[in-house]
Image 1: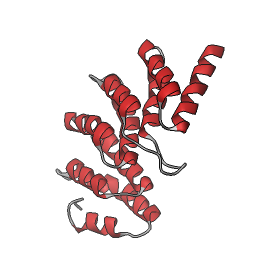
Image 2: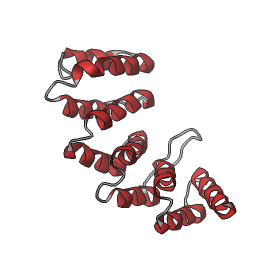
Image 3: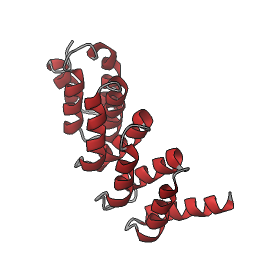
Image 4: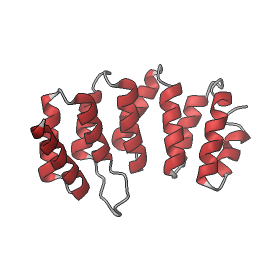
Length: 176
């Protein structure tokens, strides 16, 4: 079974996203032996729009591609430049989960927390800046520059949710 064969098309054609996510999750162990699996999975991610399916696909890419430099580079690139903010946010999370100490990961997260182009349209949207700021606090709280970014976002972020989160983190830190 190959992910680039009609199986991928069949999985992508499943209409309800929940069923598509389950089908992908179930098929993953059978698809990983294919030589083009990681590249095909990246193509799937580019074509997908459902957050649940994207989550399964991006986590699979991080898991199955964790030993590939190309996968690390994909996550570095997509955390910053993917068109879909959900992909940027998920890429940020997986970048830290899989490659926390890799070269320039902290710098990429800083850029995402400071300069991601996200503009909130509805209250339930995922903001990649908030995701980047959250993982910076969770994983790099001991880096002084992290708290400089949190302070800047508390004052200057255009998203009220990011400002409120940053302000709450600063207040919590002062109490500790």
